[in-house]
Length: 467
Image 1: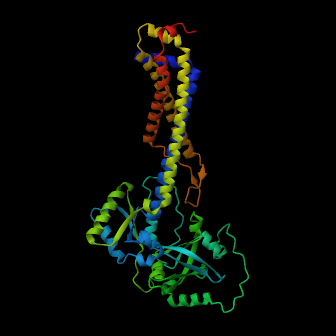
Image 2: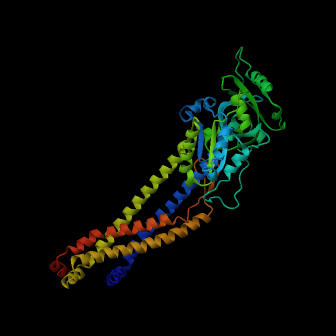
C-alpha cells in the first residue's frame, strides 16, 4: 500500500506531463470504444438486414448451390409443401422456427411493348405474408419504436401484381406511370429499318393471351409488363405482370433487373402447366444462436428421410456479409494497433523523462537499501496507475460520446441499402469496454518496463553524484 502512495505522489509531481500521458491513453480508449461499438452495431445490423431478406438458412435441391443458378427449374424442390411440413413438425426444430417459406428465383425478359422496350430481369417469387413476417424480425432490437416499414408492394390476394427495381422501371419507361421521382423517361430513338424483322411484341402478346388466367385481371391504370421465361422443358412461356410500385434495391445491378412477385406467378412462369415446385425453402429462426444446432438437425433429418436436399446458412449465401464483416474487423484491428503504439510510446517517453529527473532520488533510495526490484516495481506501478487513470477516463468519455452519437441524428447509407439511416453505436457492449480498458492498462504497464529497467540498473555511486 505504501508503494501505491509513493507511486501516486510521483505521478502528481509533474501534473502537466502526467495529464498529457493520461489524455493520450484516454484518446486511444475513446477511439477504440467508438469504432468497436460502431463495428458491433454494423455486424448486428448487417446480420439483421440479411436475415430479414433471406432467413438464417435456405434449403436447396442437391447440386443447386454449384449449378442451379443457371438452371433453377432443373434444381427445384418437388413436393416442397411436404418438406415444409416435415421441418415445421419436427419436435426439435419447432421451438426454434419463426418462418419457413418457399421461394422461386428465375431469369427472363420483361417487355413493355407499349413503348417498345424490353430488358432481362431477375425475378423472385415469394409468399407476401411470410415475407412480411420475416421483415419484422428484430432479435437485437435495433429498430426504433416508431419504425415504419415500407410497403411490400405484393399481396397474397392479387398474384399478378408486384414490384420492380427503379432502374428496371426507368429502362422500361414506367417512371411516369409509377410517379417515380428523379427518374427520366428513356430517349426516343428511331426504330431500325430492318426488313423481315420478327414481330416479337405480337408473338409475346399472343402467348400472353393464351396463358392468361382468370386471376390476371387488374386495374387498367396500373402499368403492365409481359414477362417471358422458359419452362423446365425449354418451351417459352409468358405471363402478365402488373407493377404496383418501383422500389430502390440499393445495388444498381440488382435495381436494374429486379422483379418481385407472388410465388404463384413465378411458378406459372417457370414451370408452366407442369408441377409447381420451389427453388428454395427459406428458414428464419427466433434466435441466431440456434443456427448451428438447427442446421445440424436439418441435415440429420434429410438424411433420415432420404431427401436429396442440402442446407446453406446466410454466411454461405451472402458473400457481401462475410466481406463487409472481415473488412470492418481488419479496420478495427488496424486502428487498435495504431492506438496502442501511440499509448506505449507516450508512456515510455513520460517514464524515461521521469527517470532522468529522479536519478539522485534513485541513488539515495538504493543507498538506503532498496533493491533493484523495488525500484523497478515503483516505476512499473507508476505506468500502471497512468494506464488506469487514462483507461478509466477513456471508457467514461467514450460511453458519453457514444450516447451522444446515438442521439445526434447523423445519417448515412450503409452498404446494400437504398435509404439513409441514423449512425448508431452499440452502447451496451460492456465486454468491449472491459477489453479496451484491460488492454490499455496492460500496454501502459508494459511501456513502463523499459525505463523501469533502466532505473533499476543504475549504479548507486553514479546516481548519487549525478548533477
